[in-house]
Image (tube, rainbow, N blue to C red; front, side, top):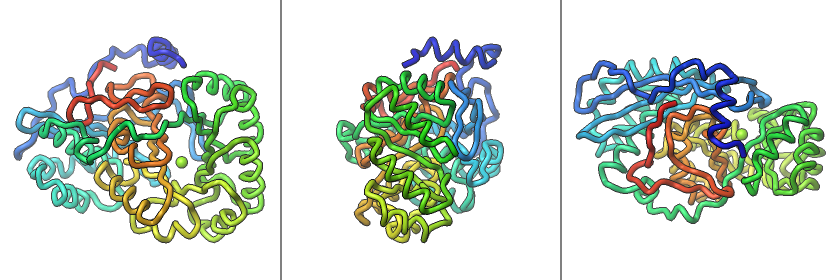
Length: 376
Ligand code: MG
């Protein structure tokens, strides 16, 4: 693994070294009315490696951050926009800023009603904005109660299975390098779905024998090709396949699933809790992300709902800081496949939170999310 100093060096090479590191919310934005003070800020997260999936390729990601202050306690939240759902960080920030007085005036103790109202005001397509608000309220509640968030949910963090580290699509040489850097992780997640899938897996396999999970990000559009690839992947020690075909190709996915042996997990197809019973017909499980559900509380409902349907649960994330990833990690004891590495892909994390040791998620024991703001 690259150590932290090397990451900064890599980040410097990408050009972020030119800016002086500052902590989030360092500038005094005007306070808003109501009982709480709520601030938003955009943060550019620089990627260690250019990140390529079937959907996009980029050197950085912008996320929206929210600070919620009340009774001398500060809660932090973050929303990572999902391009697939036509979200952007600017538009997420604008959506929050447009209702910031309502967020400040809401009663965080009546958070079920309060967050439902905010969800209603933001509308159905503001997942990143909703996540930023929900995560900040969860952090604030935990701090106010003096307990880590996992304790609020009655969870033992030691129950969380090991998390995966993701290898994005790249040349075989870089793929081998990334695989070596992920040496500390007992299970890897590999992105495929382009023309060179076999080459990618072979590059990973030339470096390691560890179990793999594979995400095709809707990349295969021919069902017979998908079946052939999945069954080949199984011979390569792949444990599960995530979103092999486009979300709208439901009948084809159903057919594919009937012809393969490893679990098929819905990610892009799973955008709302109400879809879970339908998805069960074509998938063995769902990938829950705070950036899709709009925060911790709704992610918890998705997980419980999928469990009630006897489905497998993966807990994923977008490229984001330790804020979102730590918030998700507080629920990791409830799932089969934690996939929480979005913060490890960036070079200028504005927070310190959950750590990973040999794939094991180590949560801070401080109240709330347990985050520490750091200059970045
Ligand atoms: Mg995925």
